[in-house]
Figure 1 (cartoon, rainbow, N blue to C red):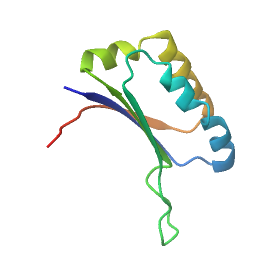
Figure 2: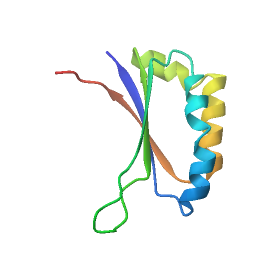
Figure 3: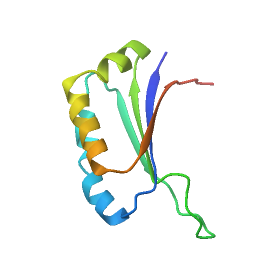
Figure 4: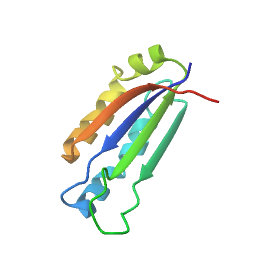
Length: 101
């Protein structure tokens, strides 16, 4: 069963600086072993101007849960997560089983 790791990145205090630091993340993510697909998204602003629940999301797809689990322990993942933490914007990571209907 396909597994994805979803990273939900909260709203940064300085969006411009965040975006400048963020642009390295997709390249680093592509170096993670057994990554099948990478999908990233920027959350649309709300029409009423209130804060969005998050700023960005990133989905990393793997063939199996075991592949995803092993991948986050790989040196390439360490570089990715180090950069993500260094940016300084809080994030949440979720492992999910992809259900296809």
